[in-house]
Length: 252
Figure 1 (cartoon, rainbow, N blue to C red):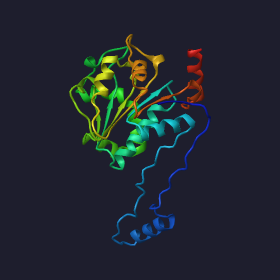
Figure 2: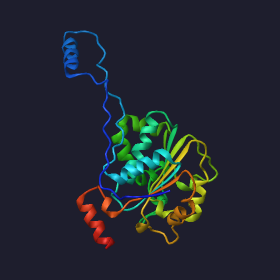
Figure 3: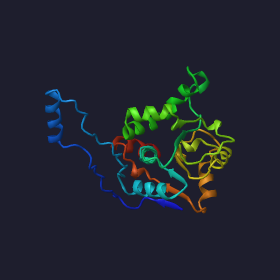
Figure 4: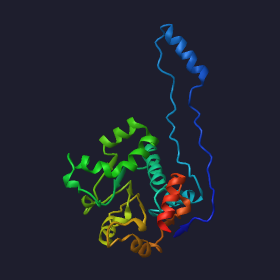
């Protein structure tokens, strides 16, 4: 199923926590602590802050992610594709509805390749995952995120290491999907096991390879139940007004 932006505004009410101590309770705790009472700190708010779409098409994208197994987010940079997908995945991991988040993107760049970067494989792959880092740190907190990385609950995995694997009870986030070939799409999407969701973000206008398989994959899979294709327009850019004007200037 394909979706496109057609409205300009769609928001959802923020969820409020009921377990945050009041200021009076915190003040009372501090006073008793100063008098020498052996007290535990007041309870903190550990409620996960759910992702809030900023416009209509982001709301459609989130709805597609919640209800489909393979989801394509197609469109310009700055439209929030990675933010929505990663925030949703963080919530599923936080609430233990999945066991793992797998992060991947094709190893395509304009400068030096991974082999020339210092460090082990995880260190070499880290620069490619910076957009995810920012979202997960904001959504989960630095401590929880670092723990999840060490425990492999959030697992950065190079695309080439996925052949032969079967993924179950997890979410796979694929960034820069326009740089996957047709063969890589077939390999990746055939890894899907039970309770596995694959969310792919890409912009066909920014492909760095001659044989991109992104549009081919959307055409092949568009009629399959459980597959959603959400298209973002340049007008849907939310990163900043300057980002929007730059992209419009280059695309016109």
